Image (cartoon, rainbow, N blue to C red; front, side, top):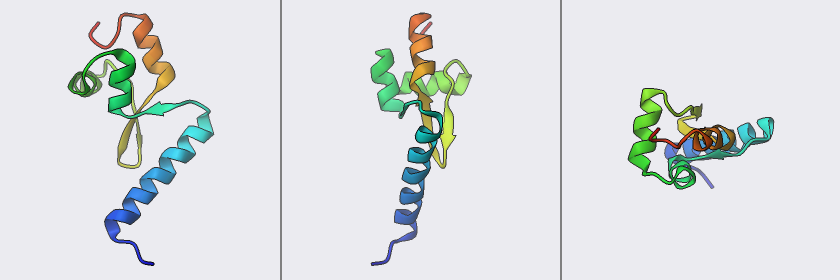
Amino acid sequence: MSLSPIEIQQLADAIAERLSSRATGDVYLDALGAAALLACSVPTIERRTKSGAIPSVKVGRLRRYRRSDLLGLHEKGGADA
């Protein structure tokens, strides 16, 4: 069985994501999960991330949002505050 370069990168991204969540013990969400948690749209998450209002981490090529950070934002008024 051989993997294409794209499949290898996807596998590496998945492994990096899994390892980072185990190392910190925190749960990481993608933009869709973050939007669902904050009851807003994915474009809002992306816009607020770009402005620095929502903290995120890069895991390989993927951007992830720490659930505990998002819950802190939610308590302060959500992503649109």
